[in-house]
Length: 223
Image 1 (cartoon, helix red, strand yellow):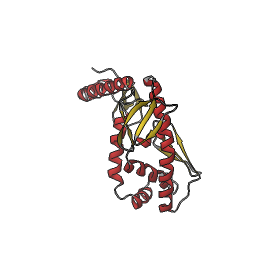
Image 2 (cartoon, one colour):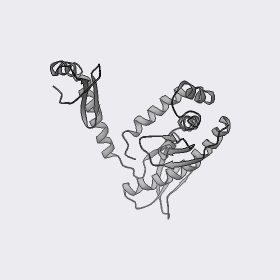
Image 3 (cartoon, helix red, strand yellow):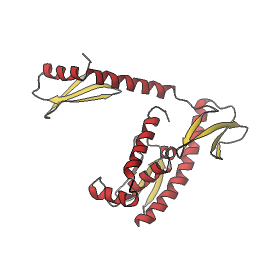
Image 4 (spheres, rainbow, N blue to C red):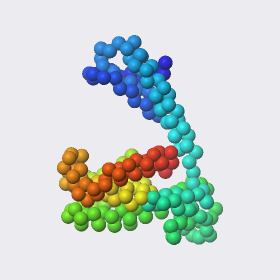
């Protein structure tokens, strides 16, 4: 039997959550432990598979590093990381040019600094473009280091975007930008909200799939 933590509450069904922290089962108050064990046992293959996947993903994140000669994403394209005798890192000709003699950690930090500069320029341009299409004006646009959210919009029309977004292709970047601009009208995900998104990006559902692909890739990269 797979070990799990049990949380009982006023619910009608049993739910199994598998995460890096282990297996958590949420069950109704009156359901017997024997019945809960039986349900968990029926899902054992799926649980073991999910735990193995998470373990492998964690190992890949721990082993992740950037070195000279590697390639990293910029707007959906793999761009080389090259070394050069220079004073500071620069991005030119779709290449991350990094000063010679740096350690993998220093190379990664240099790439992140470049990513943030690129994101600030590219995302701001796209916000201006789509804000005109939607006839709306955000109060501010900022780039942050969020890892769990691609973007956000406050009630005061302040937009925030993760610099990680610049790794996505234009379809993904455009989708997140339009998504957050639409929140200026609707601070929810109601049918009206999605109609606003669709009015600008009729293929937004396809773009969501591209975003998921990017999320899966970054899940095993420790940025």
